[in-house]
Image (cartoon, rainbow, N blue to C red):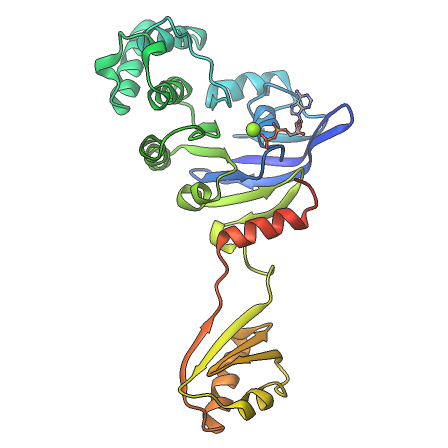
Length: 309
Ligand SMILES: Nc1ncnc2c1ncn2[C@@H]1O[C@H](COP(=O)(O)OP(=O)(O)O)[C@@H](O)[C@H]1O
Ligand SMILES: [Mg+2]
C-alpha cells in the first residue's frame, strides 16, 4: 500500500504539488493524471525517494519516505521509469541492464537470470548484444522498463511510459503494464493522456498542483455535470413539454421536436415517477436516455475549474 499524507513540494515560490492525500491499494494500476506542470513527476520523484517533500509524508509498504532506513527499504521494493530514462547508448541492452543490476547489488547468477527474463518478456533477447543507441524509441523504452523491473520490485513507478511512442509500441507497453498487475505488482503511472488512463488504470487521481478528484476513470464525471435525460416521443407534443416543467424534480425542459431534454438531479430516484407520469399522460415514449459526457469533456472541465494550467 502507498499512503500519501498531505504530501507537498515547493520550489522557491512554485508549489509543484500541495497537500496530496491518497491511498493506493496493492495490485492497483493507479494513474496520476494531469496536464503538463500538474506536479506528477514531482510527486513520483518524492515517492521514489529522489527528492524530499517540503511538507507531509508518504509510506510505501509501511516504510516512510522521510527516514533514512525507510528510504533504503523503499529503493529495494520499488522500481522507477523516469521521465527521461538515461541509457548508455554505446552499451548493449545486456550491458545496460547488467550495470544496473550491479548497482542494485544483485549477485551475478541472479542478474543473468533476471536480464534474460525481462529481455525475453520484451522480445529483445535476440538483440541483447546490440548497442541501445541503434534501437528504436519503442525498443529503448522497453529496455528502460526492463531496467526498472530487473530487481523484481513490488511497486513500480512509471513516469509517462508511452510518451513519444507510436501506437503499436504504446500498446505493447500498456499490455505489459496490465500483465505486471497480474503478477502482483502495484503500479503508479504518470500520464497526461486521458485515453491511456481510461484504458489501463483501475483508479486515477486527477491532479493539478493539488488533488482534484480520485476514483475509477469512468466515475470522474459524477457530480460535475447536471444530469440530463432525453425523452424521445413518437411525435411532437408541445403541451407535454410545458406540463413536464411543472414536475417538482424536473429543473428545466428544452423541447426540440419530438425530443425533450430534461435537467434532473437524481434520476435514479425520480425516473420511476417520471415514467409513471408520462404513461398517465398518454405520452408515446420511444426512448429515455441519459446524456453521456465524454471523459474528455470531464477532464477539460475539471482542469479548467481547478484554475491552473
Ligand atoms: N527542479 C525544479 N525546480 C523548479 N521548479 C520545478 C522543478 N521541478 C518541477 N518544477 C515545477 O513544478 C511544477 C510541476 O512540475 P512537474 O512535477 O514536472 O509536473 P508534471 O510532471 O505534471 O508535468 C512545474 O511548474 C514545474 O515547472
Ligand atoms: Mg512530468
